[in-house]
Image (cartoon, rainbow, N blue to C red):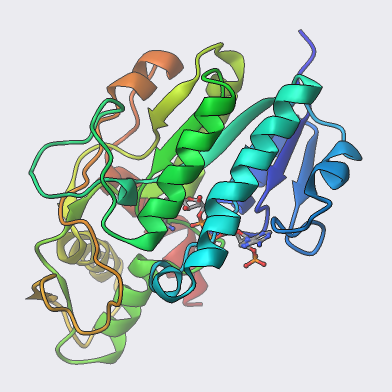
Length: 294
Ligand SMILES: NC(=O)c1ccc[n+]([C@@H]2O[C@H](COP(=O)([O-])OP(=O)(O)OC[C@H]3O[C@@H](n4cnc5c(N)ncnc54)[C@H](OP(=O)(O)O)[C@@H]3O)[C@@H](O)[C@H]2O)c1
C-alpha cells in the first residue's frame, strides 16, 4: 500500500524534530514545516497549508512556555486553540487527517489516579486552558482526528527539565527538584516510534502517548544521575534533594500535582505497550546525554 504523505508543523521543536527524523528513516515523505515557513497566527494559514502536499498533518507546534501563557493569554489561545481549529477545518475540507499534540496540563491533577482518555479535564493554568480549547476544537471538527496527549517530553533535540536537572546536579552542591509532583516522562524518540502505527490505524479521538509508569520530578532526575554515575560521570550533587510544589517561587502558573497517564489505549491501537520511562531515560543517557559530554 502507498504510504501517506506527512507534514509536521513544529518541525524544529523537541518532539517535532524527533517525529520528522523517525518518519523519514521509515521511508515516509515528510514536509518539515518550521515557524520560519509558517507562523500559526498567520491570516494566510489555510492558504499556505493549501500549497503543501500531505495526507496527514501532525501539529506539534504550540506556545509551550507555561508561565508566559499566564501573562499572554490572547497569544496562548491564538497558537494553542485557534490555530489547531483552523488546521482541523483545513484538513477536513481537503480530506486529510490531523494528529494534534496535547498535554497532561489539561488535567487538574488533584487526585492520585492515572489519567485515561476518559478522565475529566479541568486545567489550572492558561496554558492548560488554551490546550484544552485546542483539543475540543479539533475533535469538534472531526472526532476521527487524533488528539495525542503527552507529558514531560525529553529527547536530544531541545533541552528539557531532565537536562536542566542534570546540569544543576553536575554544577552545584545541593541540587534539588520538586519531589511531590508526579507524571509520566515521554522520550520524544519513543513517541515518534508510535506514529506509524497511528497512521496505519483508523482510530481517532483522545489518545495518551508517553512512556509507562510514573515518577516525581526529583526521582526522574535522580534516576538519570544514577545512570550517568554508573558510567563514570562525576556530580557535585550525588543525591538530589526534594522541594515541595506548593509555593515553589519560580512558577507563575499553577502546575497540576498528579498527571501520570494510562497508556492502555495506545497499547491496544499500536499492538505493543510503551516501554518504561526508566528504560527510555537509560537509552537517552547512553546514546545522547553522556556522549555529548565529550
Ligand atoms: N515539553 C513537554 O514536556 C510537553 C509536555 C506535554 C505536552 N507537550 C506538548 O507537546 C507538543 C510539542 O512540544 P515540544 O516539547 O516539542 O515543544 P517545543 O520544543 O517548544 O516546540 C514547539 C514548537 O512550536 C513552534 N511554535 C511556537 N509558536 C509558533 C507559532 N506561532 N507558529 C509556528 N510555530 C510555532 C516552535 O517554534 P520555534 O522552533 O521557532 O521555537 C517550536 O518548534 C506541544 O503541543 C506541547 O504542548 C509538551
